[in-house]
Image (cartoon, rainbow, N blue to C red; front, side):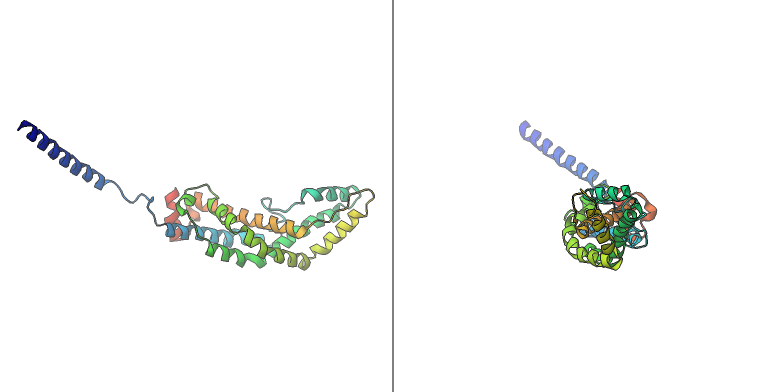
Length: 237
C-alpha cells in the first residue's frame, strides 16, 4: 500500500515538474536568427555580392582603375621582372613603364566588357550552407563565389582580355618590349603568355574589390542600404 502511494507521488511530481519546465521553455525567445530561412540568407548574400560588383568592380573599369589601385594593380610576373630590369639598365625605363601600364589598361577595358559575366554568375550561384557563410569571415561570400565560378569565368574572360590587349595596343607594346629584350646579347629569350597572366590577375582584382564591399556591409551598418541587407546581416552582428 505504501509502495503504491510512493509511486503515485513520484509520478505526480514528475508530471508537475515537466509541466513547469515546459512553461519555462515556452517563455524563452524563439527568434534568435539561428532558424532564419537559408533561402533568405542566400538572397542577402547574393545582394551583397551584387552590390560589390555595382559599387567596387565598376571602379576598375575607369582609367587607372587597376593601374593606380594598389590593391589590384597588375605587376609583372616573376619571369618578366628580369625583362623589366634589363630594359631599365639599358636606358629603356620608359618602355618598361609603358609595358606595365598596358597590362593594366587591358584589364580595365576587359572588366568593363565582362561585368555582365560576373552579374550573371552571382545570380546563378547557390549557397549550400548560407548560414555558415553569413557567420563566417569578412570575405566568406566572396571566397565562396570565387571557388565556384573562377574556372568558368576564366574561359569566358580570357577571350575578352585577348581582345582588350589588341584594343588598347598592349599586344604591340609587349611585342616591341619582348623583341628589344630578346635582342640584348647573352639574355635568355622569353615568350610569355601575357593573356593568361592578365586574365588571372584581372579576375583576382575583381574578387578583391567584391570582398571590399562585402567587408563594409558586414562591419558598417550604414552600408546596408536595403531592407534585405539589414535583415540578413543583422544576424551576424
